Image (cartoon, helix red, strand yellow):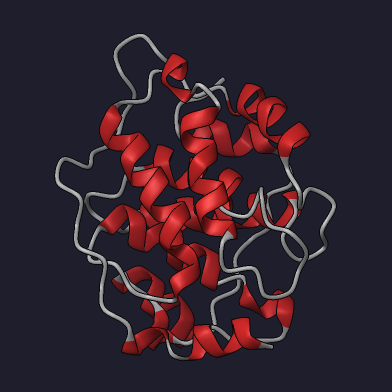
Length: 198
């Protein structure tokens, strides 16, 4: 499959530059209501029931991403959680679908996420992470790199062993190099609590 080829050539692609101003946290008085975001995403998702790219995958990416974020200075955990939910939500099928990253990025703006207290920098990071995750590159931005590493660390689900050279962050490289397996989290509420949600 051609999508596998793009993963194998990721180290040859240029890094995405860091986005200035990334930082953790919502605007004052706001909280991330992941259940409400999911209620908005599920009806428009084209991959919800997919065994490879559906909601179970989103939750696994979120869990791994939040684990990686703990040891990645400057990583915005809220953006990592949003990326996990949105990055494959508009994927069409489980085979080659390069434009799905752009469709996921469009969700960042179309779902009215500002009402959850997200700042412009967070929205821009989520949009960039979703849009460019299909290109196979690396990112110097700690948040975007964590998003992409979390997604790539789930490649075992499609028979590909994650490789350290395709990881953007030191924590992602260490996890891939060691063959680390991550604990499965089955509830969105447990993930939301890790970023201060209800």
